[in-house]
Length: 145
Image 1 (cartoon, rainbow, N blue to C red):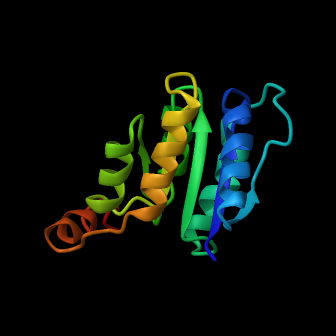
Image 2 (cartoon, rainbow, N blue to C red):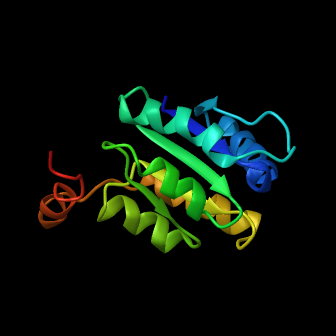
């Protein structure tokens, strides 16, 4: 069973709860990094703990959600072992896994339907990294120390 990390801000709360329910029905274990309510909050407060866990290898994959998908992705991508990709259709969710080895899917709750979001999640979780020529590029993403 895959263990999926999930987090959001207030704009993504309703979608996060729906995604969690669907993933649980499919047999996934979900670790919810918050928030616990739809009250206004600052997305970095919920995204940093999830991104740290992915960075450390505690979870293989994560899903993050905010209004545009941008703020949460920017926050998550500050961690060296995180590759968060924004998707607003299933094809992009698939490509971010296949070509970029994304380990976090970022969804723009205010710009996609629940149906599309769930299709993105399914594509992301069922697609593998192709490696090969893409691995060369992915290995160049992290800032050299």
